[in-house]
Image (cartoon, rainbow, N blue to C red; front, side, top):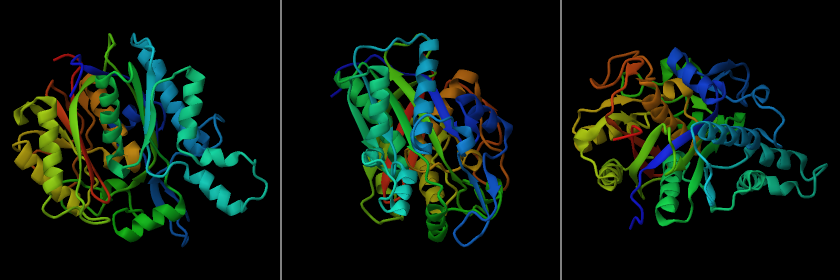
Length: 389
C-alpha cells in the first residue's frame, strides 16, 4: 500500500557514457545520430578488432580507485548539482540505490592478476559494490537507506521502483538512483559475442536495428547514469508514475516464448500507474535488436499498449550498457525528452515496425512506458510522464 500520493519527480540527472562525461554529452551524442562506439583495434582476446562504446580512462579524473568508482561518483555528483540548480534541497533522509550486474570488474581483475602481491591489505573493500555508495553517503552527510540491486538489464527499472517504494513508505525523503556497469573488458565482451547477442565486427548502426529487418544484436556499451528522485522540486524533468517487476523463471538466457511474464509486467505497470493503454504515447523499448526481444516487445506493444504508441530504442546509438546502466540511461533519456521537447530516436536503416520513430521527433505530453528485459528472465517496466499532468 502506498502511504503517500504526491507525485514522485525526477529532478536531477548525471551521466558518464561512451559519449563522454555529462548528461549534455549524452544528449548531444544522441541528437547527432552518431553512435558512441569507436573501433578498438585488437581488443578481443583473439586479437580481433571490436566496435564498442567504452568509457576510457581519459574521460575520468582521478576520483576513486577504479573506472567504476569514478564513473559512479561523477554521475551522482552531477545529478545532485543539477537537482540543486533546479531548486531541490535535500531532505533529512536521503537514500541511495545502485543497480549493477557485477560491480567493479576492474578491481576483481587486478586482484586475480596480482594474486595478492603488492596490494593494500584493505583493498578488498573496494571489491564490494556498496563501497562507492558508502563513500558518497559519507561525503554528502546522507543517512537514508542504501541498496545495491543486481537484476542484470532490468536492474535500472528495479532501482527506480525501489526508490519509489522508499519514498512512498516514508523510509526516505529523497533517493539518488544510479545504474553503473563498466563491463567491456575483452574477456566479458568475448563471452557476449559467443552468446550470439553482442556484435563487434561492424558499426553498431548497421548491426543493431531494433524492430527492423536485418538486425544482428547489439553493440556493447558502458555507463553510469544517476537521477535524483524526490517529491519536492520546482523544476523536475519528469514524473515516475508507477511500474512493475516480474521474472520468467524459464531459462538462463532465453525469454519464455509465451512472453507471459513480460506481458504481465507491462500490464501491471499500467495498473500501478493508474493509466490506460491509450495514455501511453511512447514505448521506450529495451530494444537490443535481438530476435527474441524484438518479438516479445512487439507483442507487448500490440497486446498491452494497443499498437498506437510510437516506438524507439537508443541502443543503436548509446550501445547496450548492460546491467543497471541500461535502464537508468534510457529512463533518463525519456526524462530529458520531456524537458527538451524532442525524442532523440535513431534513424531507421531498414524496413521495420510501422510505429518505429525515424530520427529525432518532437515530443508531446503523452506518457512513456519504459521496458527492460534482462538475461535470465528479469523484467521491469516503469511509466514516466511530463513534469505536470
